[in-house]
Length: 288
Length: 309
Image (tube, rainbow over all chains, first blue to last red; front, side, top):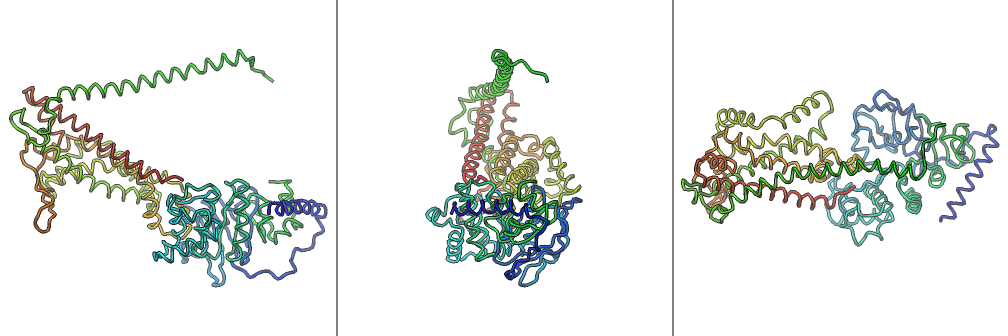
């Protein structure tokens, strides 16, 4: 596993260097295989914190059962963009969305005024930068999303909790201590607990906001492995400041800079033969 | 380029000089602490010695009397306990609800700013002012009489700002990411409040409630203002009875006295023997406050054990 990852990282670095030598004459990076169906699409999305415009007219697809990575230097708006997908900004005053994020198959604009942010969050779940388990038992952490949906049937909760903890590759480690407090787990386990919590409600999209930035390399590897496993069942959007991570886990990558998506394409294309000079500069480490 | 003197001797000299301030500060700190503690211990011991002879079981079970040797604090400690019950029952729900509303629901604008400034100022209003307000409002306007319920309501008003401020502080200490975690799974504001905000802020709220109650238990001025009796030789009607409906709230309407008033009454008598009674009652009042604080520390420890982020 680790060797495979290292190998891929090396190939990537090598290829980007080759790519930089060949820049200039690059064919339009349209892939040969038909693109997977759309799960969501942002259309001319702009976002303001008060007077400051953090996102500038972003249009970008999110493909179903694929991992889409958002990369870019600090302050480029990648987390802001991610948090539009579950209307997290609605919790704070003086924020404004313009444009649309349309969720398929029902063609719902997540940002519409008549769409309740709670409805959006019930369909699109989120895992945060720092593990944030509730100071409650492991069981209650996972069950919370079900409880707010009014599910109190013990058998159903038991079944969903086990299913979600298995899905988050945590079941075997915690099955004998489901009543212990979640914050007693290690950092990596806490993050997997948060993934189980986000998974328990059968979301259509899962958002990951730099999910491994607070974790050690081993815990990071296990989360990355988990993400690759999860995409069989759910569409994933992940923000990462770690380009190797984007290369390892994602199918599509968007490079963002100053509130704009500079380039969006298949991950291999972004890393092997980016069309834009700025993308290449960032990926090869000449900038950022 | 300027170089600073850097031989090992010079460095050691600098450190020794800088560390002198540590010593000075520690000395000042110990002196400050000592003054506070010694004053309290001296006062308390003096009171304990004066009242020691009167600290007998009968002291708790006898009503006040014209004869100092037979006087007890039965009506006073029962009155204090009942008034405190009413105070807590009124101040805690109101204060917590107000604090939660201000922190979680209210929009942040100039109206809430003014409310916030007012609440902070209310905490500093002299207690006699609350007594005058209560006399006009509860005793005369609402006709609640010079009763336990009036006293409880008055003291509740007095400690309400403390409870509100403590609630808000406790809520603010909950990390934003915990709140976001709850909202992110689709919880409504009320679900987040009831499942997370209130449980996690409970230890802090409790501390505020106890600080408020410790202030209220010793208050004399507002209670005198609303007209508490100083000599009372009967107990309020019992809250539980053998007959249907078994629970009675008649005690709320009963006249009463409280510990500080009983003490005040005894200290103002010329007979020295009554001063011993006052000292004994004061000792018990201190122990009541300590017991309340002890309970709060224990509860807070129990509740906080499982809350960490």
